[in-house]
Image 1 (cartoon, rainbow, N blue to C red):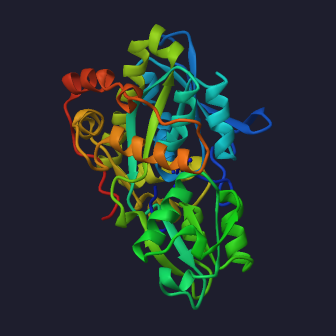
Image 2: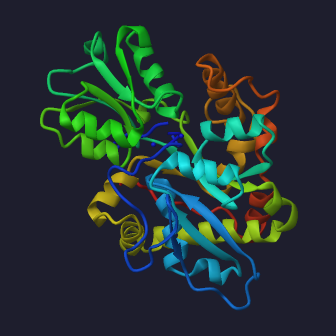
Length: 364
């Protein structure tokens, strides 16, 4: 997984989300917590719950939004201790959550499916974004359309949301994976391979997508803007946290939306908070965020509960992605009822107390 997440290229990814372009966490606050994780902890509110919850994040724009409540001390305001734990390799964050090393994780929906099937207890409690240009398929000079990829090498990671996204893109030109030379590389390796000229095209998410497009003559062939709702990124909480600390989950969600309110009212500072955490420039952060469609509280609830046969409904999207993962033998079966993966209860409590206010327009 964004899944696994284009100057404006979204998708779909999750899940998505690489260490090639950037590391997260300011140099002042970084300290090694494991071989693959860096912790960036804010001050603790002495009146908050005594437990510190670890939230795993990796290199994807919508995941950087957690640096706003950290920098502006909204976790402390809401009486919850949260430690952001950065993973340079996205898949390491997923493994850490599955093994109980972090209590919460930001990830792309595809990476929530295998744990669910295997019986790992968790709840999906918040929608962070839909890729709206943050994922994309980019080709080198001379490749001007998807049909030009016939017989050409295309890099992305097998079985990830970017793989799924690539198949959707090829389908628009009445092509399949058999029409290209598929090169199985992690997202973090796909971007450097493309820039080095060792592959003809690559499916990537931000911020690697924007970096890839700096290659002279490169062209964005397809973007998650073309597939609204296909690549959702969410927050998962562990079964233990859901059972024992529902109030703290509500506090985390409130802190997130305090961050969204701050982003709307103080965009420049919010971008600076995220850029500092991500260790990229503010201009780069603004470009990266332009590929994410952020959600209001009500929109999060609707995405979980408002049934439809479209990608606007998370259980439908999850089922379609599960069918893909099963077809490529990444999972043994398709979940019987993907509705059970989502719990909008906390969001409804947040809605009662704070309403559903506007979120940042990242495209402006």
